[in-house]
Image 1 (cartoon, rainbow, N blue to C red):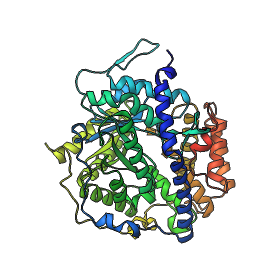
Image 2: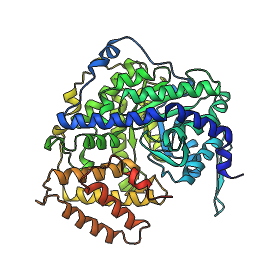
Image 3: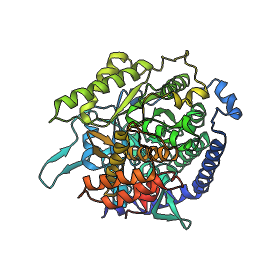
Image 4: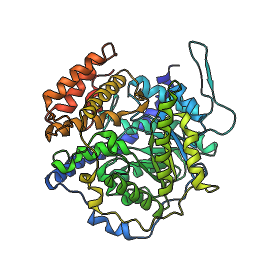
Length: 512
């Protein structure tokens, strides 16, 4: 039996058809609402907390208590559902594995299906691999990381399946296949179907997910509240609706996560035509201590703990380099500083991208948590964040530099080439990068061109300058697979007059 036949059984297809019949049209309506809200923000240069949901923010309520295997989340490892990486993540010692079918995964049809096969085997602890060279990968005896799967965002379609004459919704395909095949098995093993929900922009999108969960639980005959979700707050409009998002999902919510790179991308995208006050300096100089980023993370911890939900920190993307101990030592110092700040702020855990960083992150959180599983008791009542605080991009220290421009082009092209080749988790310059990396790179270039930003060398960023840098980058990367297509795509998404909402949309058209 082929992998596709094993996963796309007649019963599974019927379950997916039911999801699309019930929720496909609502998904489409919410994408239209996104565009309308963005247009309003472009007109006013503002976002604010919603007047119509003030009562939810002032009322007394809490999310459902966490299941046992999600009460301690001090270290979470992220990565795609590729078989070897899945085994390594489960064996890593992390409390949670974010099994990523979204930004760390190119949605080649083979990846979509094989990812579900690997998850099926991981849930049943039968996953193993022997490489062509004879190297064996198996699960270690004992406890493994709890699986929390991340489906694609609402905006992405899955063209290899159709329902009611239209391409399937990628999010419903990823969620539906995983929950259909694994929910009961997970419950029998003392766990459950847990999810990370990406790219949401409003509480109405959270309401849609909640209705999807309720429908799925009813269809599968499992108790209401079995499914649990952690929402990535990685868009600027969602930052203004954290409480409302938790409220909509309150029977199914586990927490919120601070997705830093996508959040920066969203800030640029949302206010790309709002003038110089929203122009950011070099990506690498925008740290989590920038005032607007500090406001976002402080509000997230305050909101989560007020409502009994977990606050999850951002990614440590560094890949230790055993051949360069000096680079590794400096990077690990930065990781420790980052995780120490998060732990001190009240986060309940944080993300790493490499197994070698699990012990570093755990050491930091162990030092703060001790025997406690989390910091829900640290309510941060003193935190008060205004709309102006969240939008105070202008106070970000740093400069736009020639080196920053070249790095944006280089990393953007490298990542897109990797993505087109089927690898959505790309090791670039000792960092594990996903689609958010390329998004912020190309969005920043687009913004700098439109605002005629002057670099540290006195040059003004123009489309011609960017194309010169692109040409030089192409020469430097000569021989890289998919290079020409990557350069063409970067030019399109960084320099076209109309800003493409997500580069993965035109990129998807270039793969099988």
